[in-house]
Length: 239
Image (cartoon, rainbow, N blue to C red; front, side):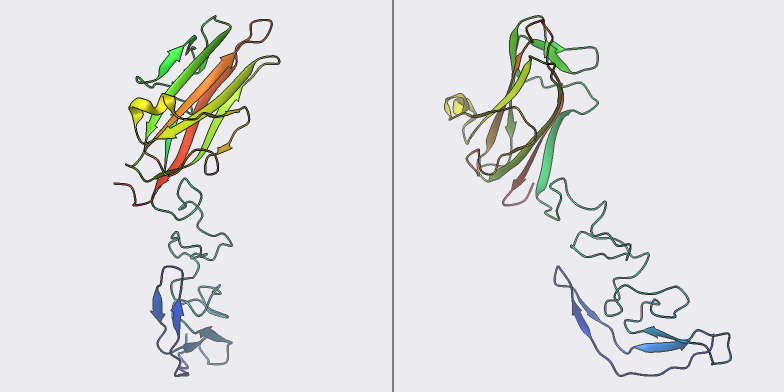
């Protein structure tokens, strides 16, 4: 490949999400022909090797050297690797780039095991799911602990199978004192997943109580709770 070196005296600062600045220096063009200098020129303004008529291929943003095919995708709301998708496989469990977001999950292919849960009339079946133990009604209550005083509880998702005539509902409470959380106002019941907690439970708070209430169908069929997940974030970050 013959270098034709046309200096454009171009200095461009690109500000991306997250405040990154990239000094592109001097743009360049390369002859991408067969060595006789007659081929189309490779236009590579950001000097990352990619551009129109460049041998490695075109660039999706020739003003940002950190964006090109094969670049490492980072969570910054930018398509870094030029594959037409943004932040794929790098988003947090909240579905965004918030590093302080996390989840607490029970079940999801594993037995719903919480030694501190308040269980009444329900038990684990052979698949590790929660079902009624033969009682017509029952309940499962657990208290989740976030960050002291500054947890924003975002969402509860659950997977269930509810036979016709049976019911499975969720109620929630939140507060900053676990010992008195049973005295806090109750929100719900909810029978459709997911439940958006931002406009429901008092936020921010330290503790969140989830209570699932089970009721069998008239012919004795139990609802099945396969698993549940709570999404939350700490205002000061997770320690």
